[in-house]
Image (cartoon, rainbow, N blue to C red):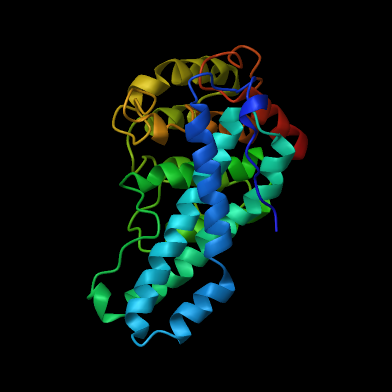
Length: 278
């Protein structure tokens, strides 16, 4: 089973994002390691089979598996920011997707318990902050050469979402041809809706549009969960500011990124890695 080992504090000298707090990074990686040890298939089965109240056990397991999925996605994100090996990220990414699939399994089971009532909610609500998880999973699958996992990822954000998202559908379209024409808008407006015009533009205009997208990306993200997460009091939540979707778009549309690869928030080495993998 692949894992991510934290870069030791003594070797923490070349992060990709200089705003990253060393202690917060190590804590986040250790959270993922702890989840890997505690939330195992064996422990899940034991928790449900030995509980006097199966419904309560399913609620507990759903919560634990969701936390593991969050921890894994945070870990792969922050490890990139810290300067982690791209090969290590590629090796670990299937574990990230697997953790979300396990959560989805028990989330569906939870919806069959009295605790859920009659209301079902998405695994990843595309109208809410969950969108950030959906766009990172989708983009990283492309960037890490794990496009074979996109079907599983799309299944996650298909569940109980009423509407399709224009950007997510455009990103997976070259890999999942059965999904039909992407809609013309995003479920989560900014900054993502600004990316749709890049897809719709002639090829010779896409470099300029991508440059503009990156220039506006951070301020346009003011309603997103990561906005200002580097500020005092929130540094323990700071994973690194990256427009992973911009790099994924560059790969999907085969845009030469020479003119914008040095802009803030563009993960240039990850884009290069993705081009070699795809």
